Amino acid sequence: MLFRSQKKVKKTEVESWIEKRYTSKSEEIMRDSERYINKIEDSEQKIKNFLNEFKFMTPNERIFKKIYKIALSSQDKFINSLLLTTEKINTNYSDIDSLKEVHKNLVETVGSIQKYIGMHGRYLMIVYEREMKLLSRFLKDFDGNIEKLGNLLKDSEFVAIENIMNII
Image (tube, rainbow, N blue to C red; front, side, top):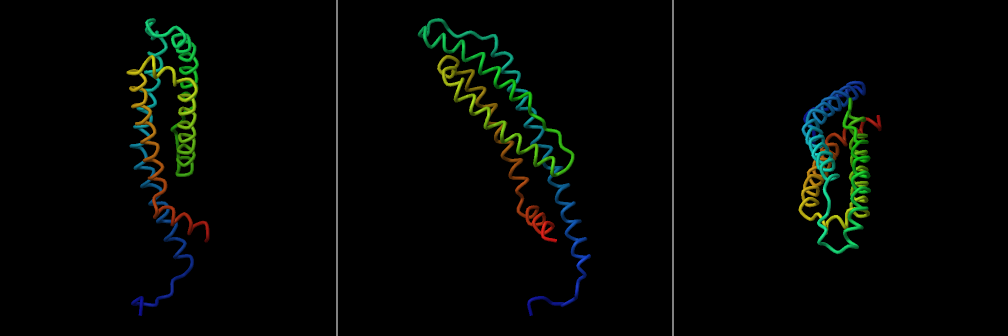
């Protein structure tokens, strides 16, 4: 025999157990997510600080005039685009569903930032190589913590319990 006892369990008992397990796992994920949210907020602040300092930098005039002009015009667009994007970041959540929404919005933010780097940042990499590498490091930390938060939300036990709750 596969199971030692063949005790009948009431459906309400099963539902109650699943609900308790879901609540427990949700609370665990919410507790663990605080670490990543704090790191994301820290990276966000570093990015904003960098951009506010970057506003006042000017490219070296010894570079080619055409690249110099492109870099000057790209710099403002780049900074404004990233500042607008980072201003929209909201890391407030109250439950597991709002935490999932926060994660979804953060993933979209990373996509927007990557788009702006491709559009306005490519010439800045030539002119401000060191500074753009620093920004890349901040963005890598930001993205890495968003990915870790996503992995936390994809916890297999939590997803399984959530699927069972949707069936019942």
